[in-house]
Length: 111
Length: 113
Image (tube, rainbow over all chains, first blue to last red; front, top):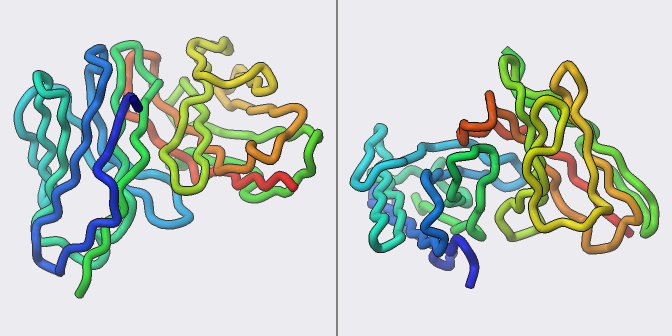
């Protein structure tokens, strides 16, 4: 079993819709969770991170964490074609630095 | 304010050769981590350097080694290259070993023939 697993893609949504990206993790030692966006041929860029159970909102993005279910999600409201990218979920530890990434979910937003 | 810079951006090697990749962290950051990203996969943690020492290491063989210099810059060395070492090598930096918020460089694309 992979430590961090993401729902297989590609995920296709129409422009203006809500995109839902999901991630589960197996190591309860993970303390923090990160969502990165990676455009083709580019490096990952941080969208947001979450440490506590519940929701965290930042503009059109909402991250949700449920430690009991070992589940993390990212919602993108009012999806735009520019959101088309691969989204990477990662778990981190208190000692810092080391992130365990999932395999990524490719999102395509159709105009 | 310069972000994380990596060099070279692309390189081609043959099996058995050795390669050195370089990274300068973001200004104000003192910790450098290296990741390997194979095509279609998420990045995999190789190791982390802080205060010129390797602090954490992922599941990579000893062919992968690194170094951090007093100015916080870092090198990744891979010996006896295999075809499977072909990947995007990402350097990430942050401040201190307790922080997880990483800034990634653009990466070095290594192709092994």
